[in-house]
Image (cartoon, rainbow, N blue to C red; front, side, top):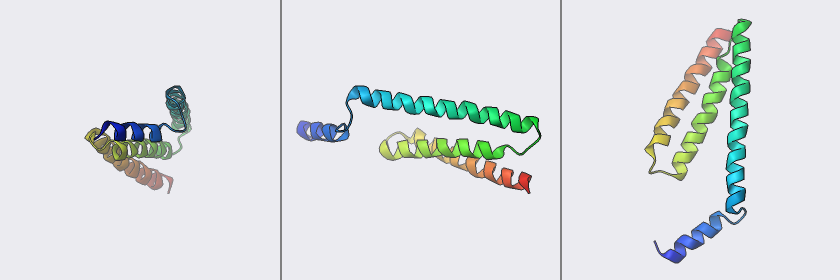
Length: 105
């Protein structure tokens, strides 16, 4: 690929944010996901403690992780790891959802 074409693609990709803003945006997404993960596990432990079905929370967490992995693979197809993790997490999501439905019935 030509140098000018690469520079043009980079400018288009970073049109709305500079590098600092992009880094802050990435960090805020990770912090938000960390908070969701911690709170979800707290709710799950509470549901286990009061003897209620809890697989719904696991299916939500694995669905979000699967979506992130598959999206990363679509943007970086050379990284097959994201595809494999996405498929594993998607299978886990389906299993957890079925288990939750079976337990809740």
